[in-house]
Length: 75
Image (cartoon, rainbow, N blue to C red; front, side, top):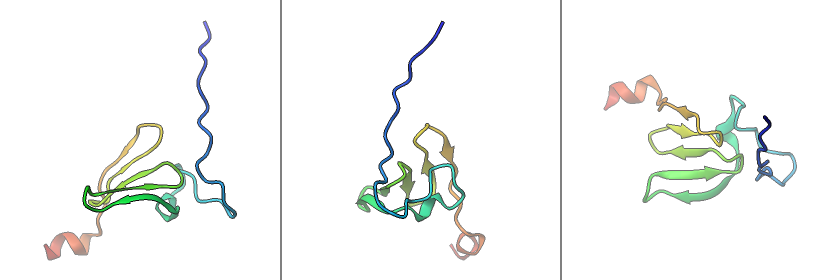
């Protein structure tokens, strides 16, 4: 049995290309859409970045919020 998967073309069309969604520096990608009133931004590599520093990767994986420890203790 075989399955066909639709390949999604990369959003990043500029040079040099942005870090991929699997890179540790994925948050450095360019903004495609920014909605601070809703608390999220879409990056060029397909990552949804939330204001609490959580992330949703294009493949559906969730990255838990990772605010710096100093910010958590100051609040």
